[in-house]
Length: 50
Image (cartoon, rainbow, N blue to C red; front, side):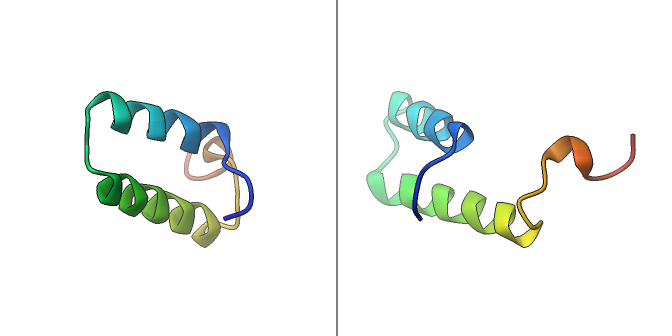
């Protein structure tokens, strides 16, 4: 992962606030990262119905 997006930074901050384990944080970030790339980095507003 090159540079974290604002979303991933926010997720990290929330996970650390809730005092989850580092391995949980890594897993969540990995899943989010793969989800974003699965959808070809499209913005959520561009996906789905209006």
